[in-house]
Length: 407
Image (cartoon, rainbow, N blue to C red; front, side):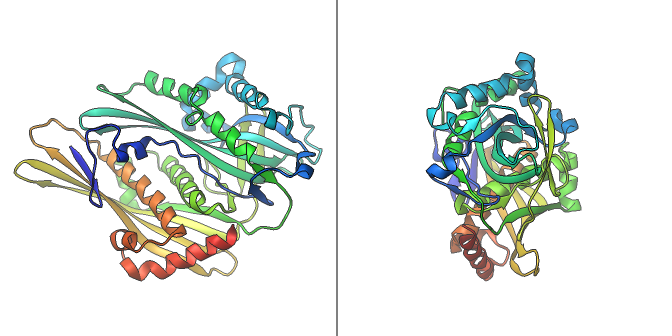
C-alpha cells in the first residue's frame, strides 16, 4: 500500500522520512501574555521567583476523564500525586530551575506569578500502514504563567510530544495507557513531555510590557463535515478543541508570537479553567486579543478508483483559514484551502483502511502546512492547496508581515 501526497510515496520502511515525520517529537513554542520572550533570564527577573503550582488539567472538571482518560488515571496514582510529584522531582533536580521557583503555597492574595504544567490535549489514534497498526499518543501542554490574585493568564508556552509504536494487532486500552505513561516517564528527554516542559521553562522570562495578541477565536464545522464526524462516532466539541490546539501550535511554531490560549473543554470563551493535582480549581481570565484567527472545516470527501492491479483511495479535506483585526474588522487573510491524500492498495493484498483515520491525517497536515504558509509564503503550496491558487498569495503575504510585527 502506498500513500501519496504531492508526489511523495509512503514506503514500507518504518524509518522512511514520511514516517519519521509522522512520529517526530515536536516541541512547539508560543509567546503570549503581558510580555514574554525566550532566552536567558536577566538577573533582575531571577530575583522574583515564580510560585510552582504543579500539574493541572485544563478544562472543566466534569470533562477531565473525557478529555484526558489515561492521564487522569495516572494522576490518581499515589494518592493523586503521581504526575505532580514526577514533575516536581524533575524540576528540583535541575539547579538552573530550582532557584527560580518557590514550592510554597499561595494565599491567593499576594501579587505573585505562578507557573503550572497545564495539560491541554491527550489524543490516541490508530493508523494502518502496509498492513501493520501504528498506535500514536499525542500530548500537548502549556508552560502556563498566571497571577492567582487577579485570576489572570500572564503567559502561555505550548509544548507537544507524539509517541508511536507499531504492532501486527490492533492497539488496546492497555497499550494506550502504557504509552501515555511512557510520555510522562520516558528516559528519552526528547519524548518525555515533562522534560520538554522544563526545557521550555528554562529558556523563558516574563516581564511587564504592552503586547499585541493573536488568538484562535473560532473553529467552525459545516453540517456536511459534521455528518462525517457523526458517522465516525466523533465528538464535534472534541474535534473543535483539537483543531484549535493544532492551529495554535502550527502558527506559533514558525512565528514565535503572542497568542492567547483557547479555552479547553468548552466553547472558545474568555476563561481558562484549571484543576490542580491537589484538587484545587481555578478559573483564569484570558486577556483580550487584537487579532482573531479562525478555521472552518468545510467538508471531508473521498472516492475510490478501481485500476486493473490496484485500488486508489483519494481523501480530501476542505477548509477555510481567516485572520482579521478584532477592533477594525480589517481582513488580512480569508482563503479556502484543501489537502489531498492518495492511498494505493494492491488488489492482491488484504489492506483495510479506516476512513476517519485518513481524514484526520489529512486534516492535521492541512493545518500544519497552512501555519507554515502563513509564515513563509510558498507559491508551490498555493498552487496545490489554495482554491484560488496564486490569487491567494496577497493574503498570505499580509499574514506573514503581520506575524513578523507581532514577534
